[in-house]
Amino acid sequence: MIRKAVLKRIKALLGDMGAAPASAPRHEAHQLAAAALLIEAASMDDSFDTAERSTILKLLTARFGLSPEEAAEILSAAESEVAESNQLYAFTKTVKDAFDHEQRIEVLEMLWEVAYTDGELHDYEANLIRRVTGLLHLSDRESGAARKRVLERLASKT
Image 1: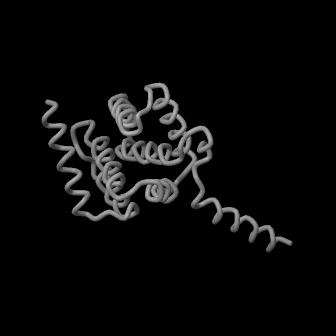
Image 2: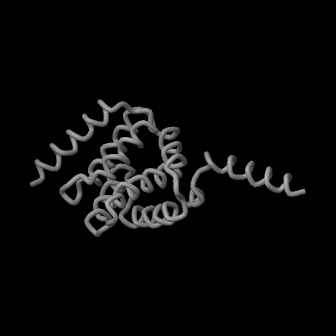
């Protein structure tokens, strides 16, 4: 009896690992997953401030052609998903499956931009981006090139 319950629970957990985030019916799963990864990057230095929130909203609006209200709604839903999840795998799998190679590089650039929003790269942010790079099946070279492009864009804005 107990064995059946345990097996049933394990099957349920394994079945949920690749599932889209719970809010997917209201939002595109890949948009929600990308927003969740951006929030993870913003939160790595134990601070998710208004500048990072603003950057994420701007990136979501531009990348997905969303209205500011839609971007805010996705950001809010993604914050809930991140609070309930303790793993990157489901988010990165959704992004990897939904985006082609070039689009995944664009997501990586978005992560770098969020990481540099406060003007410095925290070790935990760099570590997260390194892990996400691998999970998105991108190379360290592609990540480094994406980082350079972001730094050049940010430098040209100042």
